[in-house]
Amino acid sequence: MFRKIIIAAAFFLAAGLIFIIGFVPKTNTFSPASIDTHSLEENHNCSFPIIAVGDLQRTSAWEYLAGRESNDSERREIIDNISRQNPSSVILLGDMVFEGDNIDHWRYFDSLIIPIKEDHIPLFPVIGNHEYWGKNRIALQYLAERFPELNRSHWYTEICDSIALIFLDSNDLEYSDEQWQQQIDWFINKLLLYDSDPSIEGILVFAHHPPFTNSLVTGDEMQVQRGFLPTFYESNKTLAFITGHVHTYERFIERNKTFIVSGGGTRVKLKTGSGTHNDYYNGPSPRPFNYLIINKLNGGIEFTVRGVKKGNSYFFTLDQFTLPFSKGNKSG
Image (cartoon, helix red, strand yellow):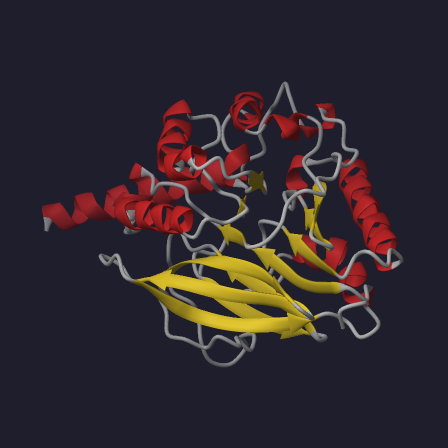
């Protein structure tokens, strides 16, 4: 009986601390307002295949006490398998660390991605909510030390073989209303520019927070729906909105646009039944650890989702589908 009381107390203490760290406003001496929020220069030299992987953060001691899995070996299997695919670049969908101002967490991340670094594979980061956790000034300093380009902008674009990649910072609470609107306006202008550019065949958008999810521990991100989806829906060339944050794999179709959630570095269960979004993958949960392979075909973009089960090293195809370019694009 005494042991059960201790375990219960530890659980509620852990949950309380996680809530406080994640949701109490922080007093910062450095913020995204200090960053030049104009787009970075586009790199027209990248190509396909590209791999996207999300939520590589290590399970914290508090989460472990609260019943979360510790998945260190599976994350290393994911990174090793990614490096063996020899991608042209890797997109990190946010939550690279559990607590952004903790140097030990960043050192774990540095150690984790050694296979990718040793192969000199470029990394395109998306900023997750955990990258902001703790003392904001220190957290952003550690982030910029690894990704110096983020000192200039937290949202940016790349052009890869006629495909525009747009990277957003979906952490609206880290910005003033004016700064948040600045990113939205930038996004709108980029979509208008790419829609009118005949050299661009398709657009992929990457952020951390998903506009739609069947997660049991979080929900649809309304700031993403309100800020980015109206123009995303209207664009003739947008193909997919790709996010992490939810520790699973999900695929939705809304208004003929595809939404992918790949937080495959960890895993959680999903809710089912009435009131849930129609998941076009429709597999049982918790789903395997996973990452996305994104490849350009003649006429569209192919997505292959590679998965591995807990305690295993055998990777298999979890999902595969192709999104065609819009009719009227040169390859459509």
